[in-house]
Image 1: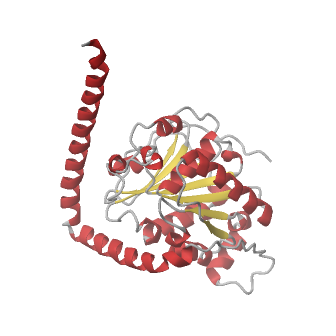
Image 2: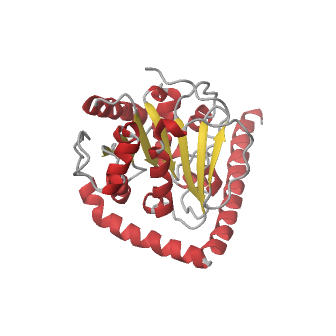
Length: 322
């Protein structure tokens, strides 16, 4: 009888997990029904499907590796007005390279619109990378990302880079910044619909990588550990209509040691976050503020309202090393 107790314990744990999963999925289904039947939700759903169709067409092109193209802004007379204004107003912001990291089972083509928009606004180097579709561990992917960051810094001569991660890409980049010392060279990390708190849907795919994205997983618990003195600024974009991150609030980044600003949207699907004009504008304008926009007063912050950016500063930013 005693030997059967561990087995019963496992069965109870599985049953409890199944009940919790069913409850979360039920709440998500009810929320989705109310969201997608609203006018804004229907529009967002239409955009999601349209971008999915376009993305499928672009996907083969995204399998090709992108070449780093360093640009020097020694003259501004040949630049379009938007690019010229950023170069003149803040050369450091315009010259900081931006590295784009895609999500699971995806490639750099998901950033086709996003990268074009950043270049139009004056950012000199915007480089999208691919990591292996066979990646089975966030930590391994983070080490791969570290190599990409170093190559980009070497090619451009820049001390720092910005990183933008969509979905899983944001978690990979966050691990690199928090756990591997990447905050020394990543000025700003932008996450678009990244499962910082995990996603209940990850229980439906028992692969090693997806298991790391379940709420309460060891990897997410590791990211929740103290990160004193982290020098990277975080910009987290999330949507209440995200159909992949369940519950949607798990895309919010909550950590007492991190300097985080949020943009909450109501009517954008998971795949559409990198093409949403509000998300693109907010990210581009925030990055364009450069170092001059970094001084923040430490004060309590209200809960975010829909489509309104929220700054969360839990502690003073440590000075960046020269």
